[in-house]
Amino acid sequence: MSHPDGLLVDIATMVEAEQDSQMSLTVVVPGAVITGRLAPEAMWRERVAEVLRDSDRLGRFAAPFTAAAPAGRTAPPTHLHFHVAKILQGSYGIPDTGGMYRVALADVSAWTVGAIGYSDG
Image (cartoon, rainbow, N blue to C red; front, top):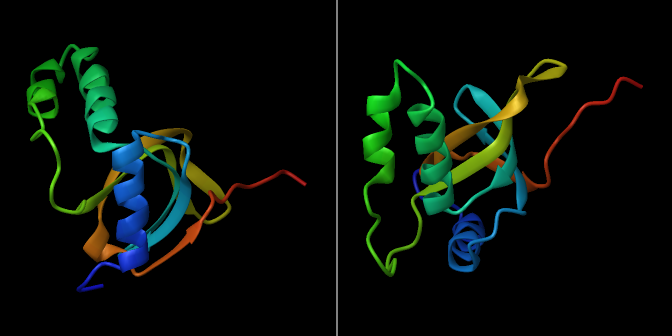
C-alpha cells in the first residue's frame, strides 16, 4: 500500500499507547505472510537488544536498539513490531519458536486479526 490502512494504524497506535503485546495479527507483505503478536516498539527493541548482547559475535550491534526513543510519540506509528512471530511458508512457520520482525505499515497489502497456526490433524 502506498498509504497505510487507517484501521491498521489505529491498532498499532493502541498497542503503543497501552504497551500491550497480546494483539495477534497476520499480514501480507511483498514476498511473505507474517503471523504473530504485535509488541510496542520499545519492548521489541529491548528484546532484540537482549538477543544481540547474548551473542559473542553480534553483541556490538545491540547499541542501535537501546538508543532512547523519543518521549511522547506524537506521530502515528510507521511500523508494526512482531514478536513470537513466524513467516508462513507452505505448511509450516519459520522459525519454529517464533521470531522478531519489523514491518513497514506502508508495505502491508492485506491483514487479518489473529495468528494463523497449523495442526498435525
